[in-house]
Length: 151
Length: 371
Image (cartoon, rainbow over all chains, first blue to last red):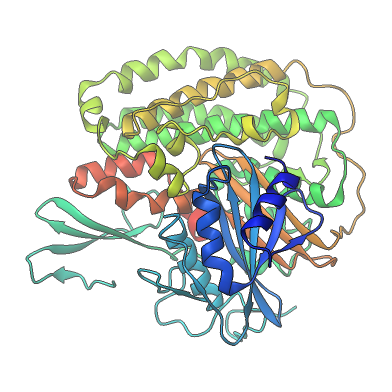
């Protein structure tokens, strides 16, 4: 399905969505309260069938976080990028690891590096950093005088 | 849950495999929960080779960060560099000359063959066959010698730059590659005689580590792991880049979904790769090897995503740019990370020997997972 048709279909699901212009794929901004129901529709609705989550990451914009989910469909071969804005001080979002099993380890990595909590995740703990590490390394305000060299 | 090494209340044993272990192909630490010799739970512990590449790249320029990515999946270093160069070119909207495109694809395919050779030798060694290792490295030496003449390095090549390739090909390149093609075509019979047809090997690999079509998609598997379960996911076919749309090759899929299918997929991919190199080696057009770009690159504000097919699967490079000389955020979507998450699903209920066979066919390179 082309971007234009996808836009129409997704806007029907949730009128409060904003679309971002530009980019090769359709970027949609979703408020975090409506996130979970939209994601379930994207995965299971006929005609959308986004069954392959190929990238899950977060970006720290200093005033807020943005979770970014890149989805594609192996049946229809269309893509969508779902973005959710999270508050910096209270960064929580529902997990999608029951929908796509790959999100299990990907969400653990985001938790490890950014400190974003995923509600209802089966086993949320640090993945790459040692278990007793303090701080969230990929945040922009992370200070580490021992390991980081500021040029 | 985090388990302590020891014995649980039910009498299950919790033991370590790795991080120093000849069969884990790098520093992978697995904590197994065993009932006798049957695996009940596999839990990977990562981070032994975490070098914070993503954070480092936030302070490196767009020309510099490519060299760090060679060290991520060091067996397909050309392909990693290619992905980063393509992503930056997408942002700069620069046209890569045809000569550079041909050279890049030939280098990519030679790297794929070299990577699959090492996989083949190491996997056979895990199962106890020591001879294939030497055969594999004999072929790999020929390829790395070819690479060394042009790129100057044998493992972390750093040859691709935004705009093309860094230097002109060595004058012997075409002759060397043609000799290699002649030599290589006869090797597949040797490999099949040595390993593939061996009854012990087949019994250890068939029906071991099964993953279904739907599970392979759900776990985010890509590359030969997913193709062995029937998923059509070859990025070179679906979203071609450089001259992949001009060459004729097959996407190899199997339906069995077990370790033997993954093995056959990779063997046949080696044949397809040499076929691609053969089609391109005589067609390299004359021209520039690098497009003219500014000395200091600045990507416009926005986001850019590039997918390529490495020897392990789908690598994604996601650059978020704020218009400066360094990226604001880079994310490398690594194929090994998602393939590893399917390991527990594959080996639950099997024996430790089957764990080694399944892990061998997943073709994990741990620096790719930890970044």
